[in-house]
Image 1 (spheres, rainbow, N blue to C red):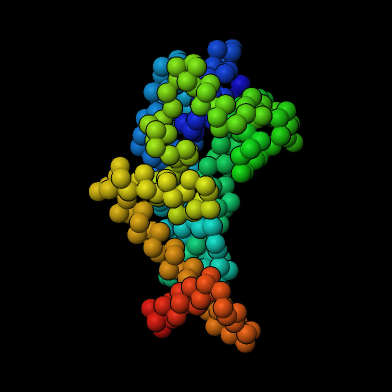
Image 2: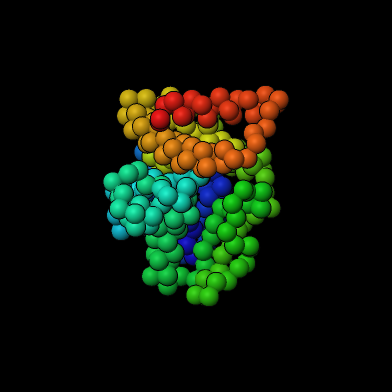
Length: 264
């Protein structure tokens, strides 16, 4: 039995529920830029519970990968994709890739390959029905014969925190301030998540002189690249009459004028 453990509260509960079963192994995906406190938490948790830990890494560290394929973003203009930049001969401009592409190559695919190589046929995940992103339903068996167990599928966040408190299990330290998982500290995507702003503010407070300056610079580069492409689309759509009279539209027009002035 393999437990995919990210160090987040949900996978922590899933691991705690099955840790005393026979032949439990823990797989942790480390892209090379996981928050330092999360790497420490995963290793310390497995050592405390005497569980064998396998660290799964992608072929190249995520920072090197994003330098080539582009930084991940929730909004990906076609002209900023690595494929398009290469085809139009502007490979030197800032490239942007989708969340699925980045997380898939750096986290999900390496984990899947590691599970297949292990020969194990049972994988435990800390996924809940209430999560924004789900993968497979409880008891699903994939074409490779691997069955997925989701022991907290019908739980809520409140159930998770109550269980941890009852069991005397302390989650990673950032949960004292923000309820979100922490994977890659340099990630410029997942900004539509409920706690996205909280994650960024936590990073700024706790890593002001180390991680934050680099992350802030990456976020600026992504925002500028998206804004530049959006400005081009807006210019092309000038033939459509603009809406007037609402505060939201007026604010939007002011933003566009500001961008036009900034980027010419």
